[in-house]
Length: 232
Image 1: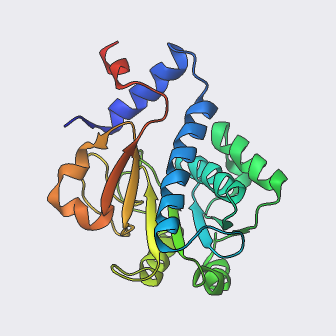
Image 2 (image 1 turned 60 degrees about the horizontal axis):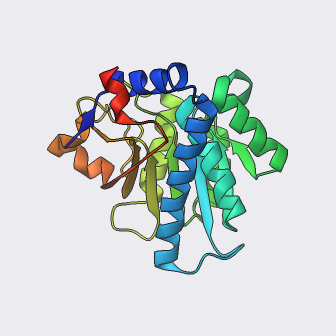
């Protein structure tokens, strides 16, 4: 089984842009659309997808993982799903492809609220309790070490509202937030996902038996960047 490290992923992304000429925003669009399709499949397993009859909470961080989340939110909205974005980062500090997709979501008028502070998170809790699915797009493969306190609070609330085996499902984008993608070790706050939609190939840390209770079922999807780029 092919597995990729944090450095492998960075190399593939870099070569896809520089050698193949695929814009980063296209890679992000492919990643987000593939993940949105998985979310739609989970919803269809539970009930027909119809406007206003499903609710997905997309938790977005400040990096490219958060950018994927904005794409997911847009694609779910287009598919008729009730979606709301919860931003755990200052949008003014976003850059690159993440900033582009955040701006698109804003121009579309997608429902959104900040959860940068404990007060904002508490205010958002009643809405979060009505969600059918949480999409975890807070932290990606670049994460290592400890989760800072504001993001830890969001992760802990998500885990509390969507316990394992419960009605609500959690879909992690690329890697559960707080999990080291190379070692598979959890940090001080780590998302417990039912499904992890990971890009290009399995991450090396997912082979650690200790990671399974955080990743749940792992589904690999493509983003338009071939793994053969690693041979360049």
